[in-house]
Length: 107
Image (cartoon, rainbow, N blue to C red; front, top):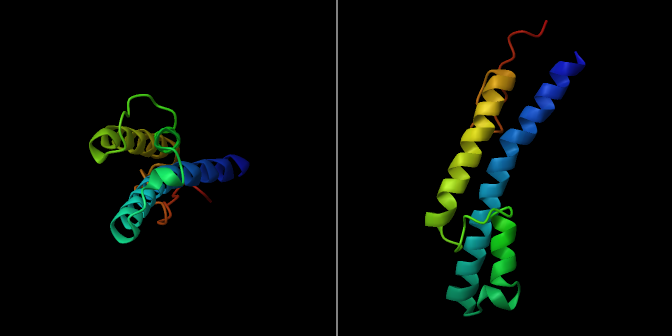
């Protein structure tokens, strides 16, 4: 019983991790666009660009610029790895984290 709860918790963490990370990247890009196009304020007045890039790229050095072209391979590989771990762990990739997986082997 406790192993099933642990698997469910780990599955939730893995499913929400990538979704939340992509949401934060999208939110910062939206904030950058809104600040620049609406108010004419560059984002680097609030936060250094290299700090933001290091934060969003989770410390991986393969991302040089804060562009979708450079973030996409990192996002895709993280999503695939977490989905595969979830599939092995609970039998469902859980691409949409708010949908619960169907656990057939719990009595």
